[in-house]
Image 1: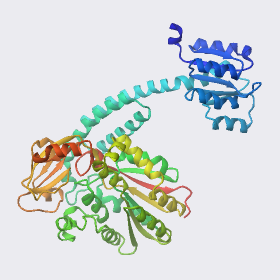
Image 2 (image 1 turned 120 degrees about the horizontal axis):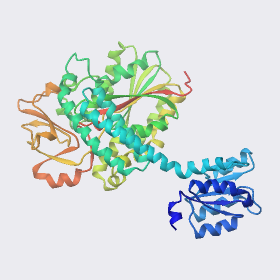
Image 3 (image 1 turned 180 degrees about the vertical axis):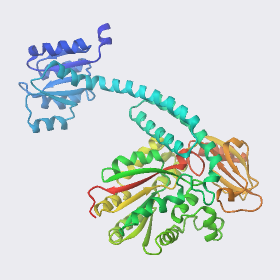
Image 4 (image 1 turned 135 degrees about the vertical axis):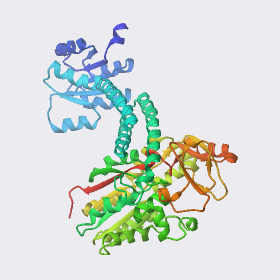
Amino acid sequence: MEGRRRARGRILWVDDEVDLLLPHRLVLEQRGYEVDTLPNGDDALSQLRRRNYDLILLDEQMPGRTGTEMLQEIRSVDSRVAVVMVTKSEEEATLTEAIARRVEDYIVKPTSPRQVLSVVARILEGPGLRHEQLTRDFVRAYSDMRARIDLAKDWRDWTDLHSEFVDWELELIAAEERGLVDSLRTLSGDARRGFCDFVVDNYGSWVARGRRNRPYLSVDVVPHFFLPLLAHGEPAVLIVVDCLRLDQWRALEPTISEDFEVEADLYFSILPSATPYARNAIFSGLFPDDLAKRRPGWPETYEESGLNSFEHELFVEQIQRLTDGSLAAHYEKMHTASDGEAMLRRLPALLDEPRAIAMVFNFVDLLTHGRAESQLLFEMARDAEALRRLTAAWYEGSDLRKALQMIRSRGVRVLLTTDHGSVHCHRPATVFAKRDATLSLRYKFGDDLRAEDSESVFAVADGASIRLPSGGLKTNYLIAREDYFFVYPTKLREYQSRYRDSFLHGGISPDEMILPVALLKPRGEAR
């Protein structure tokens, strides 16, 4: 038993020429593997029912049942065991069948002991070696990111850090390294805090009129990223997937890359990082204060009709302004399945002529909002990892994917982005407000607003300083930081039980503000 505990793995080699396997067996045993050999499939199945193995080396051409015929029965006895087919045939049909039956690898005879050892070590030791390397790489990256959080002075530093945090989380979760994920999330909490301090200190200067040395913001999406696609007199499509976090985009990117070459960048949402402000800024190219001047009464008198009810007009006006009226513009919003079906019917004709086409897909935002209201959705999207899986599953059969495939077939380029992300909120922040205060859980405007904990908010006395529409003399503004959400002292328990662990938006955090913007170039462009 002591020797078995030290073994690197248990191997069962099934071959009718077992006497010829001694050199191979000796090399494997010297490496630390425990090896049993048997001459036929029936004995192997009996042995497999009595004992567990990590890998089976299976001769494809044995008297009686062949190795290929044995595979299904082996899987019925032990579905997890790795199988390597050993064959004298190099015919493509034999190798294809072996792969189709889920063998981990195949070896063509004659083979040397070292070749067999190489295949066995890759299968049995590869995961452990990759784990060790991943751990070493993460420890180095952790120390580096820890230092960079303290040294970050520029918006580029924060976009690089956030992107790296997202990549590490995706890689560690894929490797099932839960302990390392927990360490990463602790560090990302420190990064979130530092990012919020940075935004509070710099946001006013970013949005100041005439300021140039700043990150690209929501108002820059169309003039900086989308307008160049319209320069050659061809149609181009702007797609906005509402409430898409960077990690959700990274989950979609591999599938989208099957049809498009992807050139991805990052930009910052304006504040509040919520649809009425950030998406209107995309489609208008205007900060909220200038938008309010062009739309008298916005946002106050637009509450019932919809704070984004005029996106179509804003988009057309911006395209006309940027192209001196030389290019037509079209807008589509997909809120329901019937909206998507209608869009897909219209799309071929829209792609026939030079025009700017904008499409908004609301599914991810609906999922994020619905999660707070539905226990079923809450369970399905319990954390960021589950939210990514749901987003990827939605995309597979979505009208967005169908539209992109149609667009690719026509050789049309796409700019795909989002208006804001969301943050997983865990901590309540008590606010004192009058009845006139806005109802949002991550930002509030109203008279004499006050937060119990000043560290939980970005408090602004003058909306003009951050390019928000001016209110009354007593109006002030609270924008939640990090993972806080607002609660009232009179409804503390109700709000905590309802909204704790919700994905919310409108505030200051990397997940809400640092956003993907991707140029999609069709593979095999038709034009």
